[in-house]
Length: 450
Image (cartoon, rainbow, N blue to C red):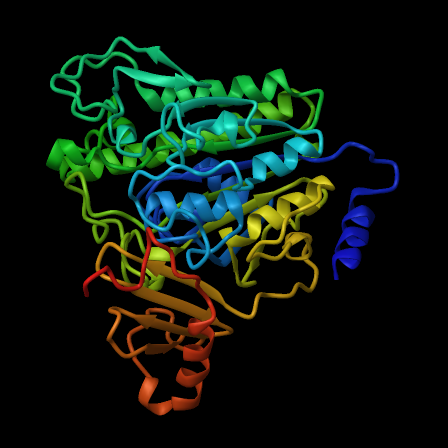
């Protein structure tokens, strides 16, 4: 199968094209499945992402690695689902030297590797910082809690702090809080660094992970947590202020995706670059924002911190002129767990064994194999699990709870639990669940003494 995929990729690239493709993965933070115009959004303006969808392929059944930040990003970077990943929750945990990331795999294949934005997988002076996990360059937030604050007192460049002009009274050790003097808006600085990395590496293959923080809320700011310099085109809308802020954050994100695509055209490397756009999980209920206001989860049920599809099914756009099919919508089922294997295939790199599969055929509009199942577990509300196998979705909302069963082909909103009518399917999913995870001292099924 790997040989066939490689040959297919070589055929599409063309015999005369020796350059490996640049790979850009743009990740939004808490953007819902229904937050983009190309996924049905009616009120928030996202013209650049809608154009990206029209110039590439829009995937309708793509899944985040988790329903919260850190584990989702761990799955994306390591290709291990949350039954095997080292980081399975939002606790402050650092990747280890033995963990293998996309960046490390591509760097060994000759790529320049850069990260602009939010990391969340390694803290200062730890083994998990990006520059010890395969990235040549990093600018942004190491700590996901620090990333709540859009006007922080510092960001990190590689392994050093960069002082900003903002003032944050009573900030914690990692710099979270609410700024009293707002000068340097972090997202704008991060977007500028992403563009600079592209320009600096335009003459060689590069991998850019642009992990933007928009539209995450500043949790410490309460109902004023949708931090944005101005609400732009929504200023005069008769909407609650948090909703104006959320809409403005998404439109600002869209604008900067447009700048990245323009930079590729201006540098003449558009045809040499595959660009992905996605979100780390479903929409949040924080910062005073209500995901129902914009129908941010679209037809799906649930939001961030839920294992129904509203918490884990996310947008995915892929654009690569002349390679990825234009204006297409694909219902191929895959997820962030597949990205490492896919990026390795695209870059001609040797990939380690992971829980994922290369999805190069799906990107090229060819018949592609899906995994037998996708798996998630969540530890913030007790031990919860979810599994998708074909069109069947199983959800367990507690360690001793029965498995709920949904037929996603006929019930995308997961409204009807049909477990009693399909005992044989439930039994099959139960068998898969038993083999899907390895218990971890940090992420056990049962806590000690319980």
